Length: 102
Image 1 (cartoon, rainbow, N blue to C red):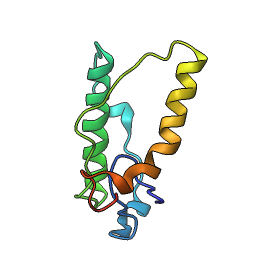
Image 2 (cartoon, rainbow, N blue to C red):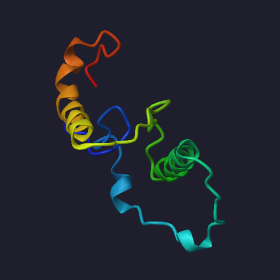
Image 3 (cartoon, one colour):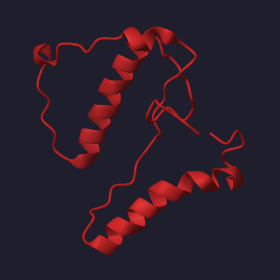
């Protein structure tokens, strides 16, 4: 599947063309945020990017609800993670929680 919108869980590229005309906001005008943890950083990123994406005309955009953080400590761990990222989408067709194969 060619999903050009990261985190959406579905291909919305043809749903609304307004995202192509979107320009980046002036981030220098925004108030700085003090981040205390990786979890908080991910939360701020998801919240901020969701607001910006919704403004572009993609109201159906959703992030996956939670995430799994892991420190990569060696080459073997890195290899396993890369392998998972590369091959996991091939297994979606057998996932009972993904009946539409998204």
